[in-house]
Length: 235
View 1 (cartoon, helix red, strand yellow):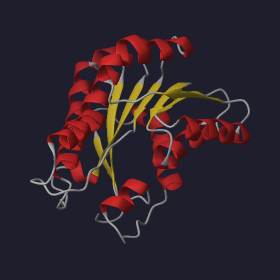
View 2 (cartoon, rainbow, N blue to C red):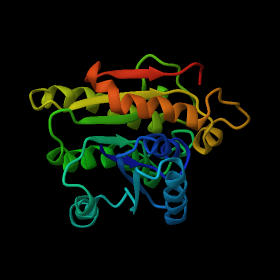
View 3 (tube, one colour):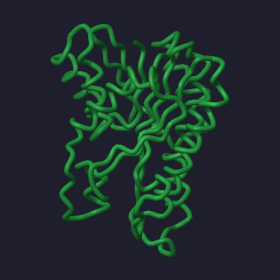
């Protein structure tokens, strides 16, 4: 399978690539800003399964004006088609609503919503029947879930990503491309520890990554246009 994973240099994204690399024949574009970490990921994945391929792609997803001319040509240089896109990259600034700057708002909305939306738009032409787009949201953006002070724009941007998943599933239903959204609960990542200092999340990144990888490969056989909460605790 040809797979693209964003936010692949750390945490859940890093571990998701490693999980996907366990299957021989998978070719995975690992996209993030950190070249050193992506190189480490590539080397580690070779130890996991030499017959899979992890392709590091260094790019800043906030540079949306460069997608057409810089990002997509690089992806097409490796893939003529794409089976799975996992929009995992995220940005969280934990600050009360009135303290947030406009720049911080724009950055979170860009990384958490505009970037995955636009990347999906550009990748869809590479997808054929059976393609699966998995958007990684948060329980903070899940309607009816408990909300937390300081996470207003982060949660709103993740809620927008969830709604987009529902809309695109309907729009592309006749083309056989599936869109699903996983609203993740507390996972022991750097971003989680920054948002909730002192809180011990019950799930490790590799555990959550195993679920995401399996869902990305098989979930579209059972789900389309669904927002699925993946959480054992609050937060």
